[in-house]
Amino acid sequence: MQPSAAPYDERLTAPRSWWLISFLVGVAFALILLPFGTLPLLGGLVGGTAVAAILASSYGSLRIRVVGDSLIAGEAKIPVAALGEAEILDPEEARAWRTHKADTRAFLLLRSYIPRALKVEVNDPDDPTPYLYLSTREPERLAEALKAARTAAA
Image (cartoon, rainbow, N blue to C red; front, side, top):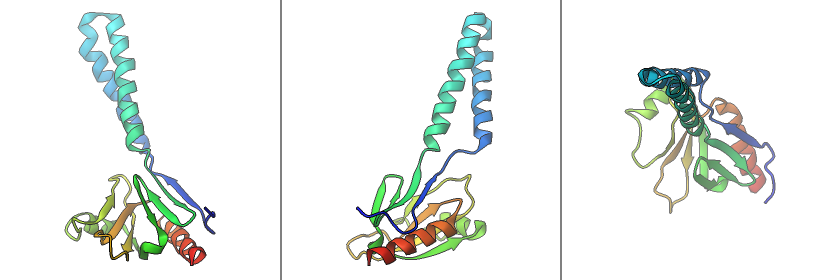
């Protein structure tokens, strides 16, 4: 597989506030276990924080990549030749495409903490998916990488 002209790799990490929330979940567990003594309190603090942090980390571990002639978004892998035009969505338009404009057949890679997105048409007649909705912090770079990969594959 040949690398694309403009490689793209983005990890949709959880926001910093989620790490504070993970610590607060640990504090809540510690307070629940407070009547049982100091050792259970510390176990609740460490265990609750660790479990909440693991959940936050796993939710924020999705990646969007343009590798060779393919777009890999989470579990989906689609050749760039099957993709059409990419539309950069500002926060208001992205919210509309997540809600009342959304098609139930579309592939949605949603992250509520990322306000912008890229909508990419799917041109493959064998694929019932009309478009991909990808939450991304850098939709301009992703659109450019898709365009460059499509040009390199042609």
